[in-house]
Structure formats: C-alpha cells, structure tokens
Length: 337
Image 1: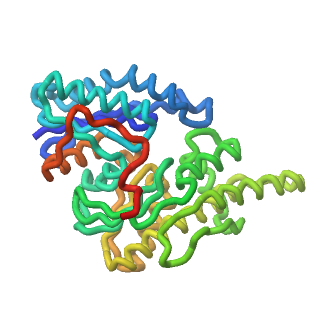
Image 2: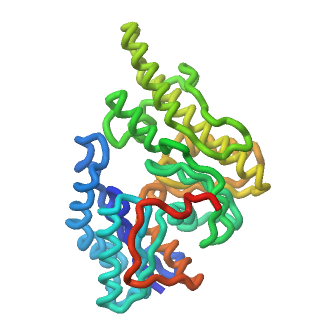
Image 3: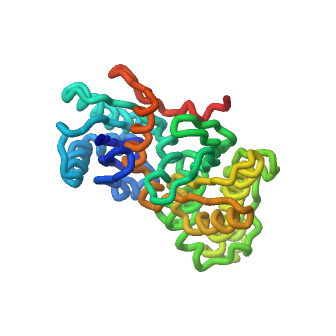
C-alpha cells in the first residue's frame, strides 16, 4: 500500500511516499528559510504564496523519487492543522483535489500527531504506551501515547513555546533566523553555568511549561549589561539560556514518565534537533532506567514522511474524512480531557 503524504503547515513544502507504513520511498522538503530570514521570522502571506508555487513540483519530485505515479497511490494524507491557515489550505486543498480527480481516499492529519509518531520512521521503535514531548517553534507539550491514534495531553506551554523562545533570544542577540541552530552553535563555546536564568513552574507534579519569563530574563540581562557598558559574552548567554530551557523540557518530561510509571520516552519536534537537548534526554533517561527514543534530525523538522505514517495509521484504524473537511489553526489535541 502506497501513501502519499503532504505537509504545508508553516514554511516547508513537503511530500513523501511511504510503502506499507514502513518503507520510506521518498521524502522531499522545500524550505523557505531564504524567503523569511530577512524578516527575522515567518511571514504568513509570503509562506502561503511560496506553497502555491512549490506544491506541484514537490509532490511530483516525491513521486519521481519513489519511482511511482498517482495511479499507484492508495491513500493521500495531508496536514489539516494546526498551523498557518493560509499555508495549510494549499496542501490540504491540493490533496483533496487529487483525491477527487483520481478517486483516491484522502485523510487529514494533525501535525502534532505526526511528530508524536515520527519515531516510527526509525529502525528502533518504542513500545506502547509511551510518554512523548513535542517541542517546536509553536508547541511544547507532553503526551501520554496509548496507541497510534490515542493521545492524552499531560502538559503544555502556558505562553511561548521552546522553539519560539530560541528564536526570540537569537533575534535579541542579533544571531539571525532560524534562531534555534544559531543559539545552539554559539552555546557550544559558552559556559552553561555562567548566568543563572530562571526555571519556571518547576514543581514535580506540574507538567506545564512557561518560557516567557526565561526570554524576558535574557532580555533584562542584556539590557542591564549594556546599561553598565559591561559587555556581553554571547556564547555564555546562549549556553546559559539553552541550559535553562533544556532543564525544563527534560525534567518535566521525565517526571511525567515517572508519575505515569512508563519507561518509554520519545522526544520529537523541531527543537529535538538540538544536540544538547538530545544529550541531556539520553543521560537523564539512562539514569532513571528509561528507554529514550529520538528521531533523526530529518524527521524532527516539519516533513511529510511523518504525515504519511500518521495518516496510514488513521486509515488502518477506520478513520475517514470527506471532501468538505477544513483546516484548523489550533489542535484539538492541545485541549485537556
């Protein structure tokens, strides 16, 4: 069975072909970083226009790399939300059009569930149930994953997401866009203990996040240093900020696993590409006797392979969509039961 996945929730136009939910035949991603970097962030209208320009070519390339065509596709899975509505509409409407013209079943996929299941694209796969952290530019949430279609929200950010905080700190320090890789690179030569930035909502039984205060603390530190003309060691600021953010992400996720007596833990989302976060998760998990599963960086960022896999699982579970389904900007999975 061949599944065509399509992803267009933000600033990547992506398409992938997955065979039998296991074998990835192609995974094409067209990034818009060069379009948005001069603005220091994603401009929704420009992102939507780029998706319109790129969607046909990206899907065509995915089919070519998979050495197949639409006549052999059995299922189309497209991101339905959350994300930028204008961007989502491009991919979702393209998928529904193909579905209608070629009479191929089409199913909408929640972007967050794609991240939650992205680890199954790797050779080492977790057993159900598991605790998963999705950390990205728009989301920082902890879930209890019971099976491929059942997810329970345990905690989420109350303000900025982790990736958003990285981007804002990078902009504050003049490091450019995207901010996550830039901050991580600077942090490699810095002292993570140089500045004592706050760790908010640190109670063990609280699985929610807050990164707004951390971001503000960095801004205040920079302001005070400039006011005193004391100079700023950017590497130390980045390393100290990163350590504070990583502490919160790791400790709350591990505490959620301990609280629920689950030994399998998954880290996913764009921020999961951060080397320090990956290292700390593995070390902390090992110390607690847990098995930690982290997708390779290619599957951490927005991609259509995870959408194809999540859509395939929904299809196997008997889920079905009609052509009148619409996109959404906020995920229903981020509402507490």
